[in-house]
Length: 345
Image 1: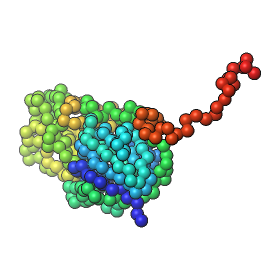
Image 2: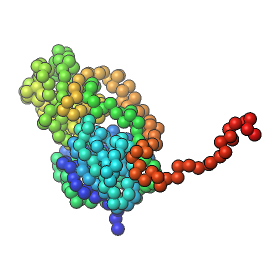
Image 3: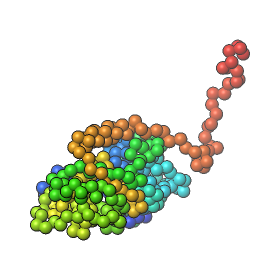
């Protein structure tokens, strides 16, 4: 019998996502994949594996069970989670046994959380990826009662572990400064327009989805530039388009591959996690940086990713959360008590 992860009750918009399908833009297919790829790298560090397919949970999770012993990594936006009613720490990996019910509630900070099983999701890949790409009809939203096939977990009994302080990328859930690099259309905006954009305060707008994130501001959009007869050009995730009314939209995983709105710049890869995980309350500021600083920032970001496995620590359980505490052997190696006193010999 094939092992599986069952969606006992599905929250809204759950999908299977991995790192996406690079290399198909010429055929009209954007990369897609997880909105926050950092969360998949964090899960890989916790599970001692490579980044693999996960369940992406925008805003709310659901209830889940497995039919084989395995582990689950909980990463991305912190969400309230329990296993058979016992609370689980986020940014951590936990063992889960057949029949246990994992419940994941709403986000506490950020936008989207991820559930990655240690027994990798084994749905059939399309163009080398298991990621749903709803915009073009690959995959579908997960429903209550769905079962996802799983491979074998190489270490199902490995103890629970966590990323202390939500790991080195934990600050991305609090908004802040998002750095932009220049693009091929940045020079269409003059210095005053770019300065105005950099001085404005933005928050996530309601017209946000997996294709793009709307940025809204109380500031006067003096960075507006009429598109006029601007020809459509290739676009990619991270590009910041300015629409006809001056509203910036940051293109995300399932964006189109061609667009006609002028692009004032592009979000640096190191800050994509910060932009996608900014909820409707945290303030965002856009800051332009040059190519030299952008290259140094990328090197620092990649080095931090490489250090993720070294950041993982064993998860010490709170005795108050262990219902069968008295069944554990807590005493061993009994001595007379004077073995460390040299005068007692």
